[in-house]
Length: 253
Image 1 (cartoon, helix red, strand yellow):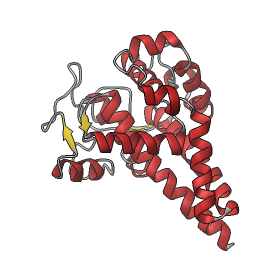
Image 2 (image 1 turned 180 degrees about the vertical axis):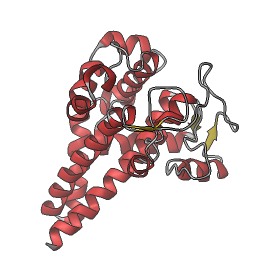
Image 3 (image 1 turned 120 degrees about the horizontal axis):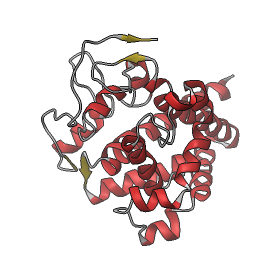
Image 4 (image 1 turned 90 degrees about the horizontal axis):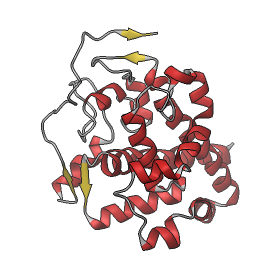
C-alpha cells in the first residue's frame, strides 16, 4: 500500500509538471507566441516536456494551430462536433498522431519551427525521452514505484489532454461566442487549459482567466517568471480575437 501511495503521489506530481510545461511552454509560448522565455527557461521547458511526454514541439504546435484554424469543422484534427465527444476522449491520441505525422500539416502550420541541431540529434527521439524520464523515476524512487508512477502519469496525462479537446468543446459554459467551453475543475487539473472558451476568444493572451472567480494555475507560473525577467508576456490587456464577443453565460449539456 505504501508503494502504491508513493507511486500515486509521484505520478500525479509528474503529470502536474507535464501539464504546466504543456500549457505554459507548448501552448501559450510556442504555439501562440503569447509569452516568450529566456534561453535557460526555454531549454528547461523543452527538456522537461521531452522527458515527461516525448512530444515533438513543432508537431504539437502544428496540430494545435490547425485546430484553431478549423475549429469544430471536418478539418479540425480532434473535433467532438464532428466525431462526438466520447470518440475524441478515447481516441484523442490516435487523432493527434494522425495529424502530427502528416508532413503537409507540419509544413503549413509549423514552418516557423524548423528543427534545430538539438532536435535532430536528441529531442526528435520521443521514445528515448520517455525511457530516460522513466529511468530517472526508477533511480529516484526504486523500480517498482518508478514504473507504477510512470504508468499513472501516462494515463493521467493522456486522459486530461483528451478531456480538453473532448469535453472542453462540449460540456461547460460559453461566456464568449465560440464552440469551446469553460470548466473550472478541468482547468485545475490541466494547469488552466479548462478555461478553453476564454482561450478561443483571446488566443494570444498568456492569461486564460478573464474573471475574478476563474483560476488559471499556469498564470501562477508565468507571472513570477516575468518578475525576474525570465519571461515576457505579449499582451498585458485583454485583446479579443476579431470575431469574438461576449454573450450571457449559459450552461451546456
